[in-house]
Length: 327
Image (cartoon, rainbow, N blue to C red; front, side, top):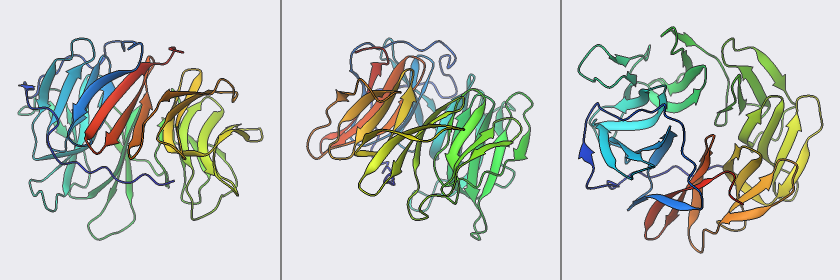
């Protein structure tokens, strides 16, 4: 169920206006997209995130912004090498590396307020020069993981945007991290589904360990309800469970790609390249997007309005979006 790394190669947009350090508001309300819509086409896969009514994306060097209302493009960050980025309020946060394209090494986690040459451009890594191992955004903090050059244990940190404090935040995570308003949800090194408070780090819930060689994939958390992809004896299954209840299998033959969005869970079927939608109780299953032969659907994410995904074929990649409430 592990997701293959995304290869970042060719530039994805050639006509973007260069507005380095100036981006339109990242805190505007999201915009319902309606029926399935292509948001961006690229010769290669890209890294992207959604902020307000805009799409932020990168081919690995710069960060560009596309309006989901007007389709206008702008280059908002120019850098030697940018990886793993997102937004907090109206700021961009990202790993920035040195200029060696053959062996890039992250030199810092950066909080950019839109003025790279001023004091509003902050490097917040306590130990720059480490290798990027993860970056996660949640309502009450930004979390990142780095590997020291001497291959010592991964370092784990939290930045509080309200106080500007950077503090250690041990998680022992093995999977990606999902969040709701209050908590983080992930699988630890023993493959236990783990829920922690974003602000205190308090551990709320740990289940018995699963198989050590297969890490389940978290899709979302909503209060005390968890949604994730796990393995049973025959296939990968989509699971829902509450803190105090038994797990419920919602459907089978799923892959490790998906997200929780409103009343639905979105996932990629393991036997096809289709994006599927299913209600939280396991009913109303339907195909949202048919990927087609020799292609891949991945990077499934949601906000309050839409579900987004990336589709890679032999001809290139495209980012799609669709309203959560379109049936």
